[in-house]
Length: 440
Image (cartoon, rainbow, N blue to C red; front, side, top):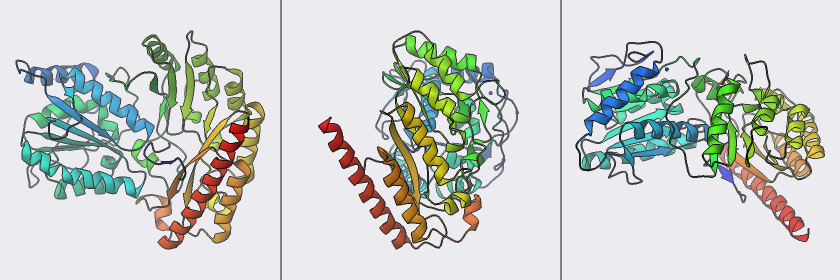
C-alpha cells in the first residue's frame, strides 16, 4: 500500500487481554505484561470505554488526545478507529502535544526512514512528559508488532507508557484503562491476526473523502516487504458489512469512497466473490458518489477488474498499480509474481478500456544486486508506460524479510544517483503530459 507520506509529486475482539508475547510482570523498570484472555469481546471493551470516561466525569473540560499517524492509508483508517474509541472514552482532540493528556503514535515499519522518523519524534516527547508528568504516551501499529522495536522502546524510551501491535487495536480501551491506572508500563504484541473485528467506533476525517477497509493482511510475501509478518495473512470482510458501511458513509455525506486493503484486489477469499464483483455491488448503491481503491498487486489485476472499472461511471479513473522494477531478474528476486511484459500488457488493457486513466505506481531503486542494466530496464518501462505519478523509494533492509539475507551491495552513492535520474525522467514525463493536456 502506498505510503501517504512518500509520494513524489516529482520532482519527485474479549475478557482480559490476549496473546501478549514479550513482557511479563516483574521486569525491572516497572514494566508490566498484559496477559489473560484470547478472544475479542465487544461488550468488555465497551465496559472499559465507560470506565475510562467515568475517570473524567466532573472535570471542567474533557481530557485531550493527540493522535499522530505514519505510513499508509490503512494506518490512517486504523487511526480513525483509535480516535473513535478515544471519543467514546470522553476525549476531545488537540494538535498540541504539550496540551495532550494522551498521545497516540500509530507507527509504520515499511521503510527504515519511517522508523527513524518515529523514533526521533518519540524521543522528543520526553519534553512533553516532563512538562506534563501525568501524560500517557502510547505507541501502536506496525513498528510495535516487531519484537526488536518493542525491546528498543522498553529499554531506551522509558517515558512511553503503553505499546501494542496491529492485532491488539480492538483492545485499546482495556489497554488504556490499565495504563491510566499507573500500575506500570504495558506491552502487548498479540500475534493472532486471524480475526476481523467489526463495529469499532470511528471518528472520520472531513468530508467528502472516506476510507473503507475491505480486507486486511497480505499473502504475497514479496522478498523485501515486512507487511505480511506484521499485518498477518489475508482476511476479507463480509460483503454485506462492507455494503452496510458504504451506505452509511454515503448517507452521512461522504461522496469519495476509497476501498482499502494491503492487497485490495485479492479481496474475496471465503466469500464467493472477487474484488471486481464487490466493486460492482458498491457502485450499485443509490446515491451521488465515486469509488476508488488502493493498493493493487499486478498478479491479481485482471481484465475483469478493468472492465468493471470502465463500465461503472461511479468508478474513479485512477489505478495505483506498483511495478517496483522494470527488470525481470529483479522482479523474480523480489518474488513479485509477474514479468515486465506481463505488467505492460495489463496497462495496455486498462488503457484500452479507459483512455483517460490516471496511472500511479511504486518503484524501488537499489534492490540487492541491481545492475545498471536492471536499472536501465526500469527507466525504459517508465518511458513505455508514462506514469502520471510515482511513489519512489530507495531500498532499505527490513529485518526478518528474505531480502534481508541478501548482500545490500549497491552503494548508497549509486542508489542516490539512480534515484536522481529516475526522478528527473518522471519530472520530464509529467511536464510533457501537462503540456499535452494544456493543448487539449
